[in-house]
Length: 74
Image (cartoon, rainbow, N blue to C red):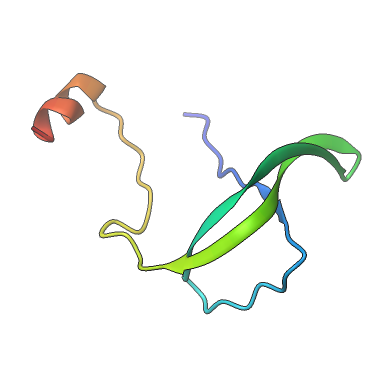
């Protein structure tokens, strides 16, 4: 299996001052920038709002048939 975490650069004019594991809703524009000599995408922040955490706060890989997943949710 070939997997790796993925992150997005976020650019904001405001200082980010949130507690560890805080959840935020970010609205912005996806743009291109250069980071360490590579062209990557960045999210240019227009607004940030602190929100309550999700009931399932972490993402877990799902390796089964996605049809079964949809049926389980019914």
